[in-house]
Image (tube, rainbow, N blue to C red; front, side, top):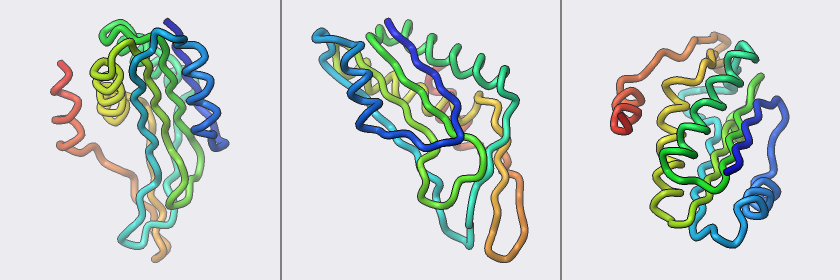
Length: 150
């Protein structure tokens, strides 16, 4: 089992990351789960700034990825989460999982995305066209989605 967790300011290449994951997973991989999250626009949103405490964030993301790898019998797992100022449409998160069977890979991907939304220690600041900024508050829908994996 191989787990890659990266926190980065620069964007990532989904094709390169997928090729790397498949190389590590090997020929026993029967399924790959993938999720690419982007900064969603609307209501005048210009950008999203993600702040974090590096050591804590790395530790939490690694623990989540390792938990998913064990729980879903993953062969390989990649989690890349960006920080800094991201414009609408930019990539913000990548989760790739490889397992012997598709259900495990897809379930692991869902588990990771739901848990990242609620457990990863990021502080998110939205910047709007009107010139104001707002900190993003936790959402009950995200908590409900994460709770289904308990």
